[in-house]
Length: 222
Length: 167
Image 1 (cartoon, rainbow over the protein chains, first blue to last red):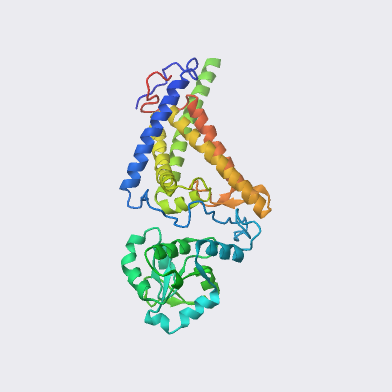
Image 2: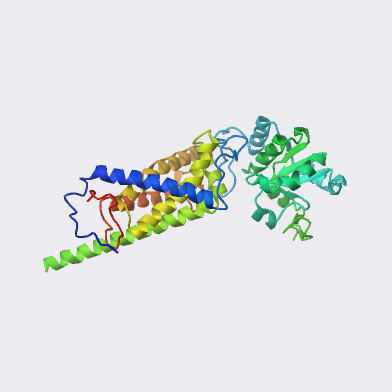
């Protein structure tokens, strides 16, 4: 490796500021080219022109306090409780909100196994595998092209479509619901289960691990 | 004796500077890769700053920033264009730290908790952390970058100055 230590140091240390600035600009330009090329090549790369947040890019995620509990309000909803915040957000997006009792009732209806009610899990594959509402279909709104073939015909046939994610600050279920609405699923039959899988497991309702209909169903009952 | 001590001090300083360059390079490669491997997560975190209404711009930032960090980290490890890279990093870290600081102040006012008790994932690459620790980390990164910008860390570098006239 080349050692440049023999070059004069003190006199020119700050003298060539313009050259250093030029070097920084060059690094920035080459770095940007490298970055976009790497993103393009990467199988996990982002599609630059895709709208990953159909409900808006500036919608703030509610903060988490130091005790790890979701905060009472977000940066743009200081006066609202979490439930009110969620309801207001749904209304703003023209979506219908489902509470835990309604979600559980739909889950236990005989129409669910018949396909008239469809549950959609709007989380990524890893979380889906770790545990989802039994019979729910995976639909990651950040990679919808992978799931449309399976999910769309089911949603078109269904009378009610229940979309959920983690609950709390997660708004991926809303993104998924809007995606489904945008591709022609009637808004009247799309419902967002706001409490999500967190509330579902807290209520000791069954959770299926692994693939859909894997048979590995458990509850939190001890 | 005095000359020997000065020489030893010089060697120690040079060694420290090279180690600092390598450390900084490794940190940026690690932080960059941790985001580049989960770009959607980083995109969601970046979104919390309400930087832009344009999805194209937001996607571009989320796509490019992690790999840019990796690129700068590799340059620092190899010792190529060190001063320019250090300046580019400072130009990136300072505004981002101000954004994180601003976000933390906002959270503090909403949560009504002490500033240092504010904890959130700033998208820096290390997951959720207390704001004071994060600001301190960023301050150290800026400090190390400034040290390299001043011309230190030349030893074991492939091409310390990419443009010839910078001394």
